[in-house]
Image (cartoon, rainbow, N blue to C red; front, side, top):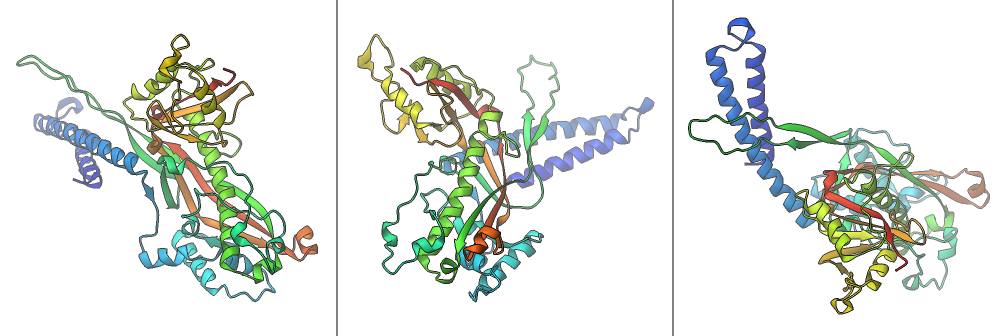
Length: 422
């Protein structure tokens, strides 16, 4: 049975139990014998349904963790295909009054997105599908005005990108929710019914199930940049790729950094803010305290799948022997891309070295991290900003609305003081 059916069945049972409790037919405001019998039957049915929900939840979570599920798309295959071919450059050019760039297709798609989302954008809505294939790959920004990359002998195939922090959260298996509208509450089973062994003719003690929720609310990240008129007029696939990549990477870096650390002004609360254990002591890294870090997650009945940390942390772990008295046993990190049998993700985003002597290391079940995106990526052009105007350029603002949530605080453990000096 699907989770939706199970939840509906539970809702019907609870509604009937509530009705019995609200309309007692016995003496002194208590239930009548018939009502009490029916209530006990419903209670047993509820316990059975809760067990089935718990099993289905476990299976669903196992599937998500195995696949790194991303929930994307509008459900309309034809529209999704059109959205992926959306031209970001033409969408920007459409907002410059005196440019005669054909952008009717982009305007129409923006209007359709606005209609479906029930919003009135200030500029043009750019579908997230426009960035899907580029969000976790290296990008290509413009170092200066767009005219710098338009030349008769421009060698686009040799374009040199700036050095960027590696984006890792999506690739580790975080769940991505796109197209959110209102605030999001995700139901969460807090406490299950308990089972017990009893003697013959002995009764079971009642146990209650408890529920809570994981909430997500819109938070905003944005970037300002500048493009030349020539760049917008002389559109080509190469320029389109550069612009898409740069905007995608700028905002994706902000999302990754917030997902890992967050907690600052107006930011989502990231893993290091909400993890059940975020201060495991590894000031002097040893094989034993690394296994203890893994154990903090495993002992909470969670299956972790990867480590994430600053490159300096992994360099240090590759220098430190498992046993100082028995160097033949090897190093704490003996393989380039695995640590204690788990995958490794290196990034300078979020968990940067706290000091020259220490850094941060996170272990967890990355399928329990949720990234939620509201609306689309919104582009607003200002051709009259004084500095840009004097050069004949246009200023462009990009805004992204998203939030980060962790399904279980126990799914992550971290050390913020991994010693690097060894």
